Length: 598
Image (cartoon, rainbow, N blue to C red; front, side):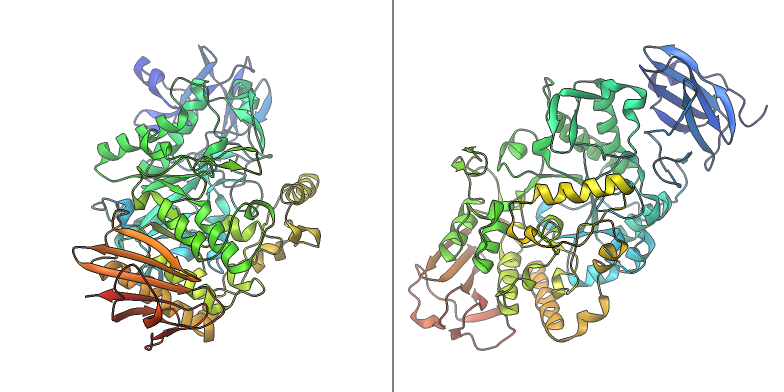
């Protein structure tokens, strides 16, 4: 029997085999669903084999095709890549590689995951986190992240996307990790090494659209998509179609079971429109948590969703939500910006106290940018379900120059460190963006690697999407230029110098306190209160272990702490000072302290 000769497949295997290529004990099953083609073929290692029609658009063949074999499908005579491919070594338009289940031998199988309240997230982009821009290069930095004090890594999207470089939100083949970062076994080695060090690893996934280039699902069956919905990025995904629904749920299961990720961050869930009886988000949450119970590990599901909908946690079953409102209030406080979505937000001590107390700002008030109510009260959510940040990839990269918070004119390093102290002493789940901990000088710009006409269209589309920001009126770096990508790579040599080192030391000390201090360790909203006296923000956390008081002077004048009229006694001992000072009797402008009793 030749390597490409067909094998008989028992009926039960035909009924349960997934689409794409599945390696099994009797050979590799290649299965396709197509409502558009009448004749299907498999081109395996250069040899064409007809596929058997099973009915209902299903076609199948079973071949002796070991891991490493290359293949593509042939639809009515047209060579077509596999949208279910587990690896596309030559890119989205090339042949797929058969990936076996045993290509990596896991070493740290006793890892059980982390609860959300144990997480301090560190968002990173594989291509710009290190000079090497690979999984292997990032793996070398894992001990640094452990020593920094973060506990969970959140990787920006890895599903194969067009070209060599990009943010990853244009993924087109969701089952295939992006080849320029390394092979699938390299990604598994990264996750395995993180678990060895006690670090969880979550993955950012995009289930609201496919990229504009390289998605071949509609070549097989247009029913994957629908005109009932439109997303900002194109035609809507039809989650009422069982094959599309399974494409998404099986993709989530793959990342969690085969790559052993500890959870998923779901991009822009407000754009995941679904008119099915059970919303796709609810089914994802149910399946992911059931899979965790089956495997004996804890899986987390986070939503990026600007709508401020607590039901994503209390009804849908997700674990947490990225909270834009906190970021926006901090940003407006420090910069005074009013462009775009910053316009509806106020800054200052009173505004910060309000968002911290309520969890987010908009709880049903009219959102001016859409002229409709936004949000609901979040009283039923506990602190860990709010993922707070003062920077992330969007809030940096969607700026014209990709500049970071501390680089905005008028934002002092002292103010940046004070905001950092506030973030890391709240009971909400904090998220850092790569390089934030040392106030990296490198930007994080928007970069792509599309072909000519599409690249130009993407550049113009970006300008249109963010045209309401004044900063987009001038020149912006060309997303298509390799220099834009290279400029966004972290400069690791700078972190031991000057202001960078001072900021890094503050982050390390605050993250250590977050682990060791008995009050800061407890992530509860019922022990949290916030207020202000004039321009001084105060945040108090009190439980049976004592009280911790954060003070941040947002005014233009120094404040003597003994003169503050607070609704509670002023603690007498210093735990942390945003500038590393020992004297906290006077709080100068844009300084913050953490005080303790007893």
